[in-house]
Amino acid sequence: MRTKILTLISIILLAVIMVSLKLYKSDEGPHGGVIKQTNDNNYLIETKNIYSDFYVFLLDKKTKPISNIGILCDVRFIFYDGTILTIPLKPMGKDGFNSGKQTLDYLRGIVYCNVNGKIITSTFDNNNLIVKSK
View (cartoon, one colour):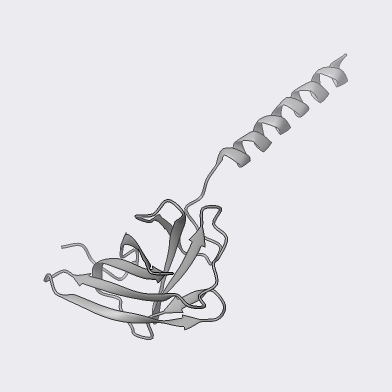
């Protein structure tokens, strides 16, 4: 009797864990960056700021990377003093873009991607720990 109860509790606990894992939705993208919604419901943009560079990946609704062939992107970094720096992003690998510049001290940014003549945008904050709030 005791074994049956423990088995039943174990099955219920396992089912709850599996359902919880399926319901949990991370905002971390397939490249380890942060996923943001875009102005178009058909795309997502993943941004990743590593100390020496800034990376962008265009994703579909299911967070699968989209090829960067034929896509043009740029990023506009907004700094604490209000200045804006626009940097064209260079294709990287099969599905990414990078800035090729060190950009640690920005406050916020806006990514613009031209996908078949349609402009896809997303706004993001600087999540780099080196940046201090003012």
